[in-house]
Amino acid sequence: MLGLLQSEWFKLRKSKVLPILLSGPLVGFFVGFALRYEANELQGQEWYLTILYMNLTYALLFLPLITGVLAGVICRYEHQSGGWKQLLALPVSRGKVFVIKYMLMLLLVLLIQLLYLGTIIAVGAINGISEPFPIEVVWKSILGGWVATFPLLALQLWMSILFKSFAAPFAVNVILTLPSILVINSERFGPYYPWAQPFSMMYIGGNEGDVFFIPWEQLLTVVGGSFVLFFLGGFLYFQRKAA
Amino acid sequence: MIENLLSSDFLKIKRKGFWLLAFLGPFGVVALQMVNYGVRKDYLLQQSNDDWGYYLGNVQSFTPLALVLGIAILTSFMASIENETNAWKQLIALPVTKMGVYLSKFTVLACLLLFSSILLMVFTLAFGLVLDLGSVVPYLDIVQYSFYPFLASLPILALQLWVSTVSQNQGIPITVGILGFILTYSAFFLPDWVIWKWPSLMNDANEPVQNVLLGVGVGCLLYVVGMIDFTRRDVK
Image (tube, rainbow over the protein chains, first blue to last red):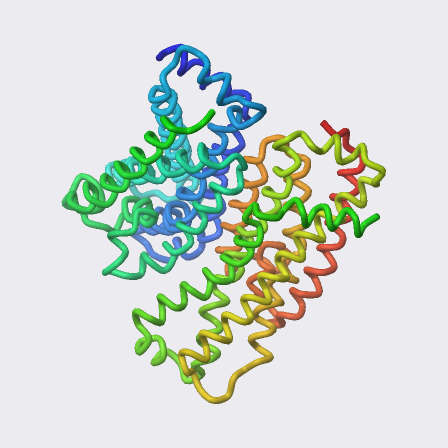
């Protein structure tokens, strides 16, 4: 298991993943500075508004979309010239390969989230926000956004194993992510759409009472339910896939 | 020569989902409005006296987004046809010029996007008529809203094609596509010279034709730059 993790890590290091990880802070800085003047207009809520605006674009669109790229990168070596055959000829079980790849993706998204946290702090410092940093709220939002990508990553891993090309799984991702722009406006459908959950779980104006910004039932049923569905789907598909 | 290259490229994209994607883009854009108007038609009709104009505005709010991501997907898909089987070398070994190869890829992609634009026009008009938005149908506006974003996004097409053909790792052009998409989504806050603002047809002068002319001009320029770089590179 450890050897498998090491080999995956090694492949990843040769995959130019760093520019992809750094695109998160890039988006954060862009949104943070594009909205600079609006945030300065309201005293006493500078952090709150800065984070609210930054999260809107980042969590609604960037985070769901980037999961597709990460999944593609993580399956890239295997899709080139019979890599699946070589990997699965080794004494490793298919289940372990799938789980390790998935865990590595979780780690990468966590890294992106932490880089984004750094970006929020940097944007605040450069814009000269003197209020105390709402650390507890921000942590909730960062980790919540991470948890919300679990089902998305599972589906994208499934799709990336299924399709040889990079663009096809990404197209699936785009088709499912774009409707979020409309869905979040709807109180009726918003809570049930998995691709809108990164936004809901990073939306700092949300439900303060719970551990995250969405109610527990929604977390368990929508995020948890879709995670189980996509993860099992991908896992079982990979067991039967012809290498 | 170019006719042969084109017919071979059109053959290569057969049954791979290119045409399906080119259909799904405009269909999705109008389908989102079907849902939008299906859920709250009365509310949306109250928003304005010019129901057709308001409807076209709603469609146009998604067109640039679908277009920019669609371009990233199609260009990367196009490059991966050759990448997957290491076919670049074999293709270039044929008695064709590299310029011809690049031109052919660009032309096929432009045809796909043109096909999408035509479908967008048809779907927009059809659903607008179903909604019964008024007797005066703004045909000219529908044509403009369907084709202007495509023409204004030619620089993005040229740039994405260049990045995808020279990248070994298709994660890079897709990430560039996502960043461009974020810029297009934030078009309102951008200065006029940013190419990712152009498909939204917004500018300070409020003159959509300006974006179209800039798009065609800069698109040709970026196309030539990308083509020259492609011809000078070693094919792996």
